[in-house]
Image (cartoon, rainbow, N blue to C red):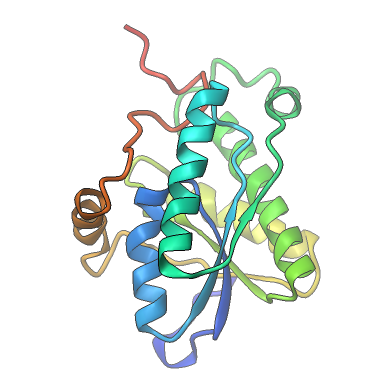
Length: 189
């Protein structure tokens, strides 16, 4: 797990993106700091399929509008359900979320290696609803499992990025979801 000082930033990063709103300010920040992001959209946790497709198309639209590479990860929600089996009743920020983050960041590390990109990061660290500790543990686990990769443990909530995210959400007229993504995180009425 790597905490990178601003005077030693990588020139290229594979950015695991959960959605366009969360990636927008991060991508803007990276470009401003001469970092070329490659967006990797890998979110088999999202349910229902229509929700997944909406988020995916918004992420792709954002990347294409900026002229940056966008990679579509496989959507296998049934496999994801098997991987979190027994954790369905866990609360948000519980063991199910830890497992979900670990699965997604492991695939991000694998994709980074396939692309020849050493450093990978995630937009999950931009959400105030997520545990940075869990995200960093998942990233560290993925880094250890995939030799030749480094997880960039960055708190993307700081430095005005949360406010900028909200501005960009309006400017790009992004679809803004109201739950994390999986059926277990949906607010039940």
